[in-house]
Length: 168
Image 1 (cartoon, rainbow, N blue to C red):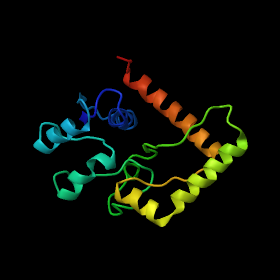
Image 2: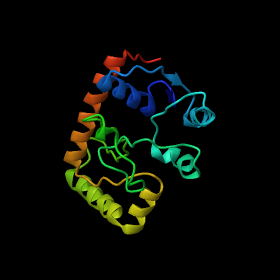
Image 3: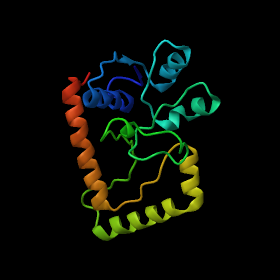
């Protein structure tokens, strides 16, 4: 199982799969997704959990076959592709990007930023472009985003402990 490197999202996504299924695979870390893709395409490794944004070009060209998406819901870009959760109940890995601000930022400024970002994410052109690139849109509130961060931190703490991963 290829990954973009030790501790990468692709690595811990596979470790979560191992934890939830008991399947044992050999982890082969690479220095980024590009060399891992090349060996996956070339048949030196058999599988890789990777972000759709970096795999999409290879999927569209037919060089890679997508088996499932790791998010809880199907991808708008690949609606006929199942989720891993369709086969492994509760499996959900969604890498996300968000905005942060210093803790001392006034609440009215946070609310304004949140409102404006959510308005931008609701724009059809922006939303379509993000989906076209293999992403998805999650417009949320500061409270919901804080909970998402805390929940993900706990999930990944359990996976790191399960896999015995250590900082290098």
